[in-house]
Length: 539
Ligand code: 3UK
Image (cartoon, rainbow, N blue to C red; front, side):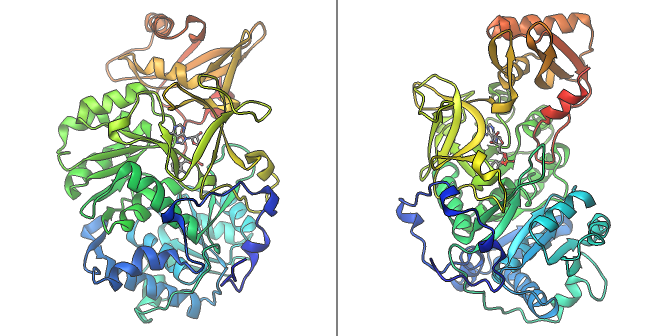
């Protein structure tokens, strides 16, 4: 084992036992990492060292524009605050709480520079959820946007281990900006080991206690070297933009790490609703966008009102991309979406395609560096066309922080993502459903997302969610909850028409026997439909 740079050994002490890890594969030449590796040195300091410090790195609200050199200076000053003012030692966990802003990015890099462990949290988390995260990851320090102070202060009262909290975007004398200004803009990064933990990402899990996934410096670099060069192929002059929070690894990669891998720039928006994103693309001349399928659906009808001529690549992840949404976006913008499935456990995308190889309804093929297959209940590999459990392995993989559920995610070295998939004759992986969302009705297995995809082909449907509703006779029946597009009115006629439409589009036994109209669907901050809430709200 490589010598850790961590004085606080908490993360090493709480990794799963080696036999419970997934198998890790580092075959590609670009995945041969040196023993000592700090991802901040690679992604940030390297540019300055190479004389590229004046390249534009971050843009944000109020005309903020930071070069790579400016981000480095900011991160270095914050690193000094952490160590000298707040008494942090390497290996400590630091909570990061804020919307997507340049300051949040500077804090993230500061944490990497001091060899600590970043635990970024979703801005909408409440005190109770923050408490769980702080206790689980034994968090000692927090850097928090002062506008989000309230819930953290409530949590802090219950969390003795949280020793110090420092607020940014604050004018207070002990605020982060004031403290940072008193320190040097030069900092020597801690010489971390490639396998020192550098971030713990909590899953956006829908039930049970949150799970912390542990990732190393080399994992951060591995995701930068696998999916982006193969599927995205960004250029140094690209301008990245999008909606996922930096606390969600989809956003961390897409909006911070990947642009910085090629020396490109990124736009960090605090509010990136579909209504805010469209004008921002025009304003910043954004060329690469990351957001979720639901956001593409919401933006498509508005595209004509904005100048999107700068946009060249659009990435969709977080949940399945229905063929109808791909088509809608292509008709609106001329751009073929790049779909990719990723998971917090694997840090980023592992099955995807580029624009030239998009196949409507399919997620794509394993990203170079990863292997994937579909397993049956016994753990045997299934032949093409059969639905089973998606299994994947590569340079990144599941390591839960002290969690018995590690055994549910890893089987014979494979990561089991909890998704039902099939591989088609051409080797494309086709999403079916979350394994626990499969609907069993009258002996048939029905994947809710297939019914959703069919409904979305109907011009009246803006959004929909399909669940199994308990039924005495059939065990479950297919129930659809539908949000209509503007100009359509709910009523028995449309109800009937949508049912008939599904019957005519996919196998008739899959049609929704129950159908309800609503004005919106419950979604997570990351754009995922909360089917469990639809189920519990079922009428
Ligand atoms: C689902 C998809 C079909 C799937 C994520 C990109 O979503 C991310 O991570 P989470 O841990 O959720 C993982 C689960 O979400 N999913 C995500 N993308 C797709 N299903 N098609 C897709 N394209 O159930 C998966 O198991 O929140 C996505 C990058 C980093 C991420 N963390």
